[in-house]
Length: 182
Ligand code: IMP
Ligand code: MG
Image (cartoon, rainbow, N blue to C red; front, top):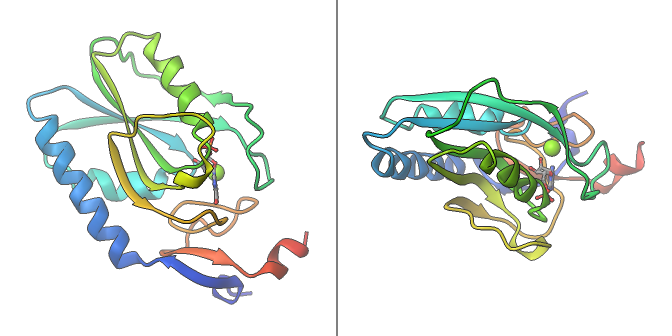
């Protein structure tokens, strides 16, 4: 089985993604020059973006990861966020950026931001490669925002459906029959 057979449409192609990642990396390099920068990636979706982003940042940095569950295997936010693996790094006094694949309702990042803020970072901001503005349930300040996308379920570039399709290089929508298979 080839994953490409399940793709309905390319929503954002790999070239546009790479151009956007480069711009975000340049901005972060400028803004955090001379600062103790720590990137915290939200597993598992942000892994692909994180790998590309750090190579577009030209200043020293550390990285860590946090694993949260918000969706299970469904395509709708439950609003319930559970920390399945916490970061190992002490973030007190450090400049932290949370790196996310996609901000949808905003519930996950609102929770994460509150949690990390209690640990006393010097600054705490958010960087996401994709944003679905139409779906926001809470107001959330995204300092580094990549590409706004329509209100449609997407996969690829780290994003999954039921654990699959994260390795597609483009951001895609799936054919309806893919959802009917389960
Ligand atoms: P939020 O809490 O609603 O903002 O969504 C948090 C997470 O849900 C995102 O970081 C994604 O990992 C996942 N998610 C939201 N929309 C989609 C989608 O269209 N495809 C795949 N994952 C999604
Ligand atoms: Mg996900």
